[in-house]
Length: 337
Image (cartoon, rainbow, N blue to C red):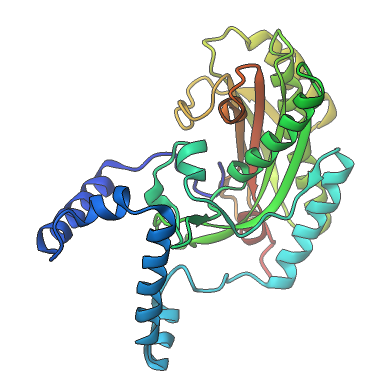
């Protein structure tokens, strides 16, 4: 996904976590404390215990300590962007989704524990986990995939061979636990799209959903220009992850078609792409553009995944996901004053 996405825990971070965990377990007064908390207590009992721990720790917080924590904690600092400007951009995006037959969904700030690690197979260490068997939404498409699965299950209940597509979109402020580096916030606004359906043969679902979602993102970039955002030299790269088996279909049904509909945008295959392999399957794409300062920036990302197939236990289910960084668009593509 976009906005400095990362789908696996890096080795140094894993080693650091294991080292700290080992020290805690060696110095802890309770033998086998990790096994007790992780495996022996029921989820309800663990939740009760952690809530009480949080209550006692919160009771010890003084106003001075609270203010310092607010200033020092990267998760609690507000966005540096103008709230009204970002809201106008988000409102435009939500209005345009309906014109592309996508249903806009207002997601909860929380999702079930394990959403990212189970659906997208990313490490739980990159998610802000709560004490109430839930986690803060870290990726819009993971949660939209759950909602797509629910709606597709209802369609399949009425017709086991239903090909009716479910198109969902959401603008959401996500929180990610990993540190991205200087200038990168722990929370930011993303647009996520999901198209769920059934295998239609000959890569037909994938090419149609891919074309549709790329078209949505390009339409949004065009509309953003009317709000003053100058994204130039827009390029879309598509990667065939099937060893070239679907290259012709992708060229004829995706690249050539989009090139006709979006003159001035560059379209090409990216056979050397390394990011996202193992995360996406079949096909993936990226969108880049030049900022007013001349920087080449990654704006969007997407591809086909097997999430709804796994959630529904049905190998015929298909899902196309994508996202674009609205915070990045707002921050990097506004012309300098």
